[in-house]
Amino acid sequence: MFTLEEKLKINPLHSSKAAFRPSLLLACILLGSVLAGCQSMPFFGPSEEPPVASPTLTKQVNIEPHNFQLADGQNIVGSLATVDTRENDTLPDIARHYGLGYNDITIANVNIDPWTPQPGSQVLLPLRFILPEAPHKGIVLNLANMRLFFYPQKQPDTLFTYPVGIGRQGWNTPMGSTKIISKRANPAWTVPESIHREHAQKGDPLPKVVRAGPNNPLGKYAMPLGFSGYLIHGTNKPYGIGMQISHGCVQLYPEDIEVLFNKSKVGMPVQIVHQPYLTAWDHEMLYLEAHEPLQKWAKQKPKLKKKLINELKQIGTQQNVSIDFEKVDRILERADGIPTPILTGSPDIKELTTAAVQVDHPDQLYGQPVVEELKESDWAVLAATFDNETEAQQLAAMLSHQGPPIPARKMEKDGVYQVIAGPFKNKKEVKTVAQRIRMDFELDAKPLKPGKVN
Image (cartoon, rainbow, N blue to C red; front, side, top):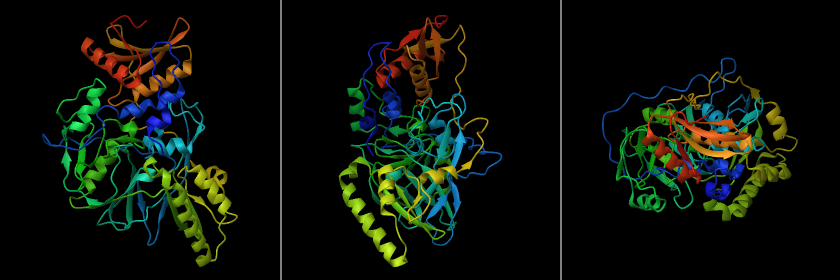
């Protein structure tokens, strides 16, 4: 899998009417470009009250995204589901509500725009997972699909699984065996010198220590690992989960790290692997789950594929079953992370998605941004102006999903579409937000005094 920089090819925009290309929309790479690091960390202050837990997913259909019961020898859990979009939904909002990462939902729904899906679009929820080949003990993290698997010590028949954000190219999350060496609530972040230099080059100097609060990239909970300088922690940029976005640490949604933090123990083993190709048996059917190898391992793809094919041939001989190797090739090419049966005559991906359970859309997606109405007395920021309504809506959605959020909406004026961020309290806050937009999106954002929006 490529880093976001390589996938998006972000183009500088220097005019308020510059073409805002859809490829820029994943510029939420910038969700992690500011304060996305971790490493050195002292801690301050008493524990705060934990955040409110995620609401029930649906009143009519029980779809469990995180907690599964395991039978002896079971290596595949969950089921596929679908949900129809509503006005103002985004795929990142749907992903977070249903325990998925950005990678999970976008790869499974390649024909749906992540930030401006048409209302009524059917979104596939890839909530079936093959477990990594590793002991079912403590925490197992598979970098290839950016997913963490947690096996509680006193519940050997229970599995918790969560999407994660991991290190981007050049800041790769390390592999191997380690353990949790401490647990801290409300952590402060001591900024490493390398990250200081990186931000200084962008004209965005950082303080030496970022204390607990909305600007702290560690979120409310952090668990340092035996790998020096690396942690499992929360985030103030939840819509970066499911991306290669950090400076090497493992990030979870705020609501997920709360659960993991409370259930895990100091000394718990942590195993980090990279397994893009996973197989498992379920009801006498063999399944294959394929992910694109991360960029660090991209050159090993032919070797990984050859190893998989040889293993499948051995399974076919030992179990006296016929494997459809043309189908295997299609699954490897698709690399969408959806466990698919591969025995001859087994259902294909179209049949699987058709049979997926339809869940009702919740009244409110968990964590979905709510943009307040602008009043005459409010300060605001003109982020950009477009001739195209969709492009304006895309930017507005992205700004609202920044971390911390920049509330934004599109507004039509004189036949063009403006993206207005706000409301803000004062001139200082407006200048800070305008600078963030300039830094992250390379847009010439302009402060708007009260009464200047319309």
